[in-house]
Image 1 (cartoon, rainbow, N blue to C red):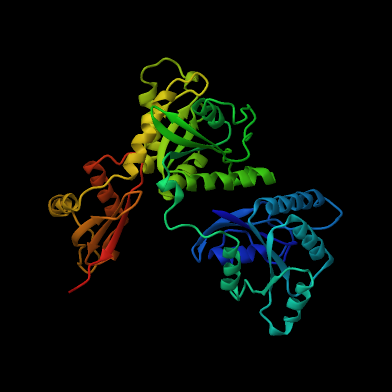
Image 2: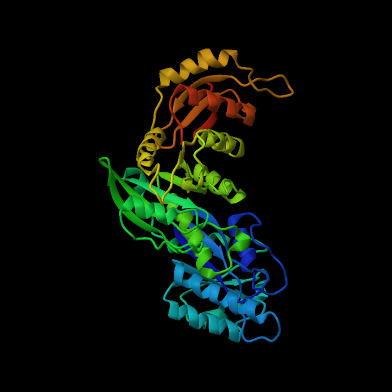
Length: 443
């Protein structure tokens, strides 16, 4: 997916526009200039395009006092946003008109060579329409009057943003690729680049004890036991509070782009630290995106020779990650190569499980026999869920459609129970399962 950055000087409404476009309050909105310290990003699907939008900190000119360092950092962040993005939304304050600082930013944008749309914000009053003509003097072809507060022209702004991004095919490229695309992801310094170099047989990724050495996604096509893989090595993901440079922020976005491009993600954990909240969020993101999941516990050479160590850690992982208990766990050492040869078989298995199908006759046997003995969910009016039949949808990951009397009666607890039953019918380890409930049409 592409990236569109929202830039402009402080207090012009960048975060308000960002929140309006996403439909939720992801960024802090405040009247104090420069309140946005780091970029925030969100995903948008519009007019057949999917892209990330990025909210940046503002740019301020020379100022006195303790804020100078922060504002200098903001300016560097915006410059990097321009370099990394496919297009830029340049936000002006319609109440202020074009300021000297706006002109400086416009000059920087023109030198950056990115496609730019100027959004003149806070134009909820028709009397301020002259601000649009002032903005046209900056030399950009596309100028839109908008109001984030009143949702004015947000659809037109999305149209312009989508135009930055090339149209995608209906079939994702990674799903039809001959090789299996595999993303190596995890926190910094868990050994992703070391494992990547072992798998690719080269030193394509820089390996260092300093966390976060890898800044962009590096890929390599490798054949292991007759199977072709495209391994994607990514930078480590930090907690948002620890993302303190422009490069680190975009390495996070690139990591999520790599997950979008893969069929299977290998999430590396450090045996000395194991599961953190960031690991949980990352694993949840992989499953939410419908990708296959393998959990690799790296630096196994640091663990003693206790034969039960693996079993104990597996039990701990199940307790810490109940939502990913179906994922295979492999213990390895990128340093000594112990356990690495087993990874290929796990990747092939998970990739096959993402494409596994259950026949309609088997599914409806499930409906007839198994669910007969299940307590069906109901409401306080005495109505209970009734399932007429079930079918598996095309594509990956596996998705099952249940036709019912009222889809609102399908409680989350029942969905989890139903998923567990389906997982016992076939091998779906390492892949998420989607369940959909549709109201049966009456004849």
